[in-house]
Image (tube, rainbow, N blue to C red):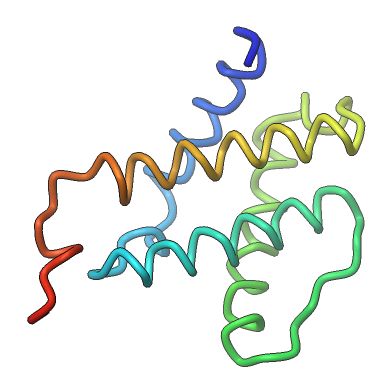
Amino acid sequence: MDDSRKDKVEQLVDYIMKWCLWQFHSRAWDREKQNEGVLTKTMQLLCEEPVDCATPADKCYWVDAMVLAKDFKETYPWLGAMDKKDIKLLMQDLKDRIDYLTITGSLNKELTDQRY
């Protein structure tokens, strides 16, 4: 990943960490599903692709994604200058980074406690 895309990912991470609560579920599997659902739907909205809302969980992720996509567009005008292919790469890098920060790199032992 080049420095420009890395900087953009970190800007988006910073926004999510400051303004979103959806990434703080109490179990790792919940966080994985939530990160995947919200960030995939956000990418689809940013790329003007159809969004699947077949299940109640999909609808919940879609609502968070709608707010996030709107806020990303308003806060980061450089997104509007990106083509869809680059947005998809950026959003995958963002998902990987959020997964690391909230799941695989987290020191929170409750995430993997089977009794929790």
